[in-house]
Image 1: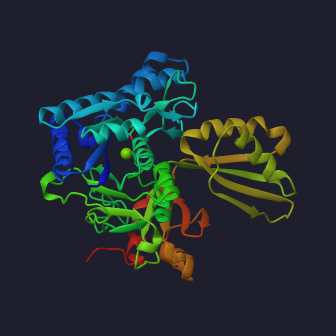
Image 2 (image 1 turned 90 degrees about the vertical axis):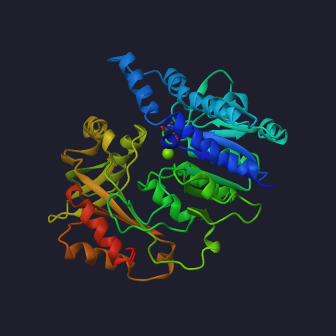
Image 3 (image 1 turned 135 degrees about the horizontal axis):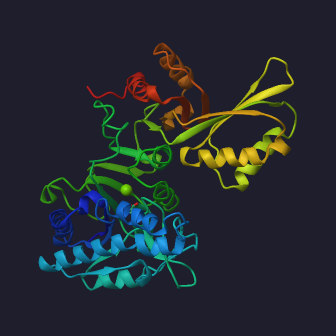
Length: 422
Ligand code: ASP
Ligand code: MG
């Protein structure tokens, strides 16, 4: 018997028919004698609707984070109840659990809380009686036990991994509307291929660089705890999949695991892109010690995340230009903060644009291969794509380009590194 956590995303539970389909996936596992804890998202579109309602209610004023959480956490509660009812109707013992009932204790950072601890005992004893535990994703309860808190958009993935860790599950299966993790977005590049296995580190980069398959925090959590995660499609015929067996589950979808388990490493395993950054250029600031600190200090204090940074030398040697990126949604606020710091920074002109995209190549193989960056830059230049900024880490290289060239850049790099399907 295996202990399995199965997580189903919004499109997988979009209506009562889809929920019945999910119940069949669960039945396949319970019929095989497995113990199952399920984590569910809100039905497709529900969270967006709930968020829109909070904004509508607040009008011109700011939405109070605690009440935002009280509203948006309801989506998952509906799905959990409906799935438990569906399972019961199929003759499978089941009950729903809200975050606070377990409890899943979070930090008190409402709207983007982190999981601080989960007591797995209640779920474990529920499972031991042969019942399926259906748990709401995305939510928990803050430390003083007074209010519901949510984990940020996409947070159900993190709930699932955290629960899998807490109950020492054999595997955490994330069911979604695609059949795995791809070398790049298949909607953009039809020749994208499913990865049979991907390392935690690569997945972490992919998630934080814009692949929407898993929430970044869920990958962090899986990596630190060595929890194996499979990404697979709920749209597959439930009975066509093999149930999990202890220690030897079938290799369906994409397995996110330790790099040691991956025999063959491509230099580059994936190409990611993100269009949600904006660039700011500060022109002609003094080129002397302390200027960077005076620019980025106020942004940091305002909690604005700066990503890529390039500093140029200008011809006169006394001044410099500084280009950097911030989340596009934070552009207006960033400009305000910079203007307010004009006194400290010294006089400068500023230019900004949200028409940029960040395109990244990711691969563990980069550690041991030279010339990966040179090849990337050459491939882009052949297509006439100008690079505005570059950042690198041990296993990724990101370039900032004009947004209009995103698709061309992604396709070009995908074939440059031999990722195109035959
Ligand atoms: N329902 C939440 C959202 O749409 C959490 C999740 O689905 O992971 O962001
Ligand atoms: Mg998701």
